[in-house]
Image (tube, rainbow, N blue to C red; front, side):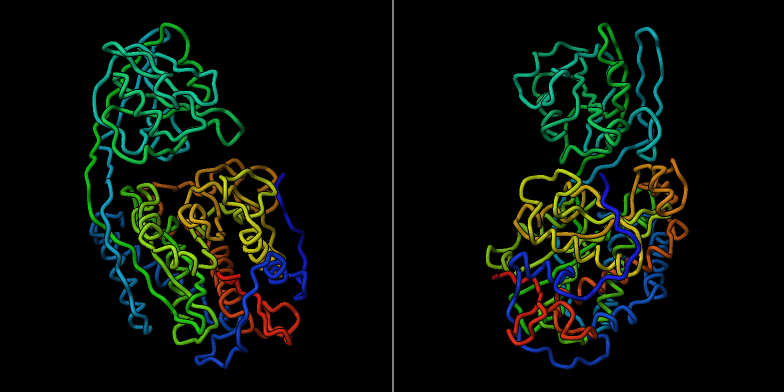
Length: 513
């Protein structure tokens, strides 16, 4: 069941999101906040400072960068480097010290259009998906190259862990293609088990566990595999599992190691050991400029960073623009892996903003309390729940309907959650299809993708909804100021406080609490 809040004004009392933060055991002792200059130093003031025009200025710059660099801003390409240069220049002009953290990653690209056909009766040529939503099949990121013709061998497809164990696979003969079902383990493990058993190719089909898992998978193998690997729908997978099925596959890919970087800047607070981090991936896919995915998140946090420049907050705020997210969340994982245990403990919250202006949007909040969706072990916690409720409070206070979305590790918050850091964030939808209920709630187009241009060339400057983008830019400001400056508010005894000023305690998410 989706969690939808009715239109109402939130009351800034102990039952607010800040009260929930305190109830979750994440209160930090802080000294009373001094007046900050410039005047973007309270929740309301910062939301006034953050403007749609400012966000759109950055999006226009990202579009121009893509136009000047082959149409994309993908990591490993000139358009990404130019995007990182732009972010660094804006931050330095605002007074920040900027770190560019280099790293290598496995770059993947499909050359031409892959082919896939059933050669047994009834013979059929299947259509390649260019948008991740329509079509019969697609390549899995890091697929190998090759031309394959042979018989389908279903691999324990009646089991939820099809292909997860090497013992699932018989020793293959020439001209055999493994058919495995999604579930339990990583796609790369299934593919590598098939390769080790001598199969010439792999087809992974969706498991049909629910309505969201019947179409194409849009998956990654996490790193290069030496044989062709395709994914397909639940329905087509069932057809291919029929005895006597033979297929042909043709695909050419590029797998190589390239260099890219993260861009990171801190706004030092009085409490340098309590860090509120927020991030967005800066890279696009090679197919397009990536203005919604994820120019919107990148522009949103850049606008907040510029607005906060020079403001003295209680807790340090760390802004990060990640590289190589589209290649498997590489940049954020590299960053988390680079931190010592003490540095990880200092990060009291991580907020993620990946696609916050989808043209056929829904207002999604990551389900940090696990009320509607199962999540990987360690993702759901009282502190992550408190972050979720903070964003819900923002929407509720403006009469804006919203709902939970899966907290499943699909974006850059994964590395932080796995490291035990409380996480949360916003999302407005990608290739998923808007339901009738969501159409009634948000308007837009029923039965269409939240972002019809997801991972496509048409994800350009016209592929955003400015209303929801403006709302979510304010939501970023609201959350950052509430967590980083719990007493920096226009609201009575200090928005984010526990309601007891005499204790000297605020509602920040203290790393040491």
